Length: 275
View 1 (cartoon, rainbow, N blue to C red):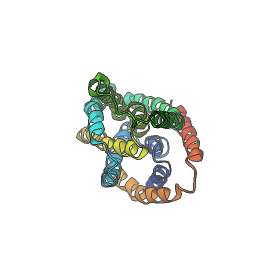
View 2 (tube, rainbow, N blue to C red):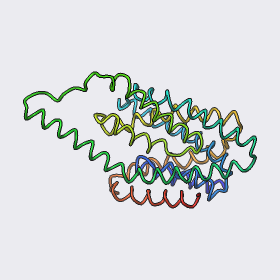
View 3 (cartoon, rainbow, N blue to C red):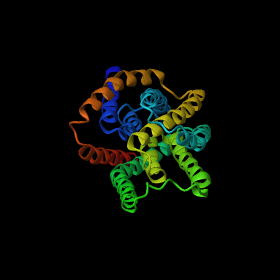
View 4 (cartoon, helix red, strand yellow):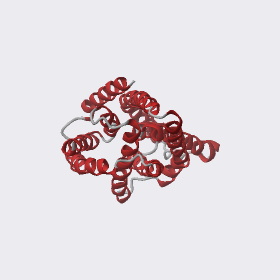
């Protein structure tokens, strides 16, 4: 059992290092389908594992100054309370439904994986559109002889966009509380639309830093409920940390356009299997 868990951690870490996002979504379904971990324990354990790994990643991004703290806090305003609600719903249903809650979690994870798979395919398209729009704005400013226009200080930027960002955080937080899946992919695609001027490294850094707060909140509630297997967390970390390093080193040799569709297919098949 021990070596299998660490090998799975190595595989997940390798995918995360290789693709940057999406690979971590496979951990909960692998624990359920391969290790036969009860779904409610798989979700709690996955959240604890993610909190630790995201915390390590956020340290790197803070040092690189690629984190927009304001946006991360806007997201957390919605996601942290929502993930607590999500975990509380799971625990309430566990108390009143017994083992039937496992079926609910499994189906919810399945549908979330399908959504993540779709967004993994859509993300490059979204990022290209955002980059094209930025290029056109810069080109127009250059032709007119004026500097690129700053964002208008309007109600959208001062009031509505923070509210929409918090709403996105709330939706993702609820899903993470229920399934532990999808925080990275869902947040990055949403931020690309809401904040088109953010550079790619800022999108990733902000997402990871926000995810730390999100997963810590979920972990505390699952810890209070006693549904985290800490031995499993330790064994997963033992394999995943070198896996992330290896995947990051090899990522420059394996094109993202090759890995992303493959990962999307694997996620979709896993989601379909759970449904």
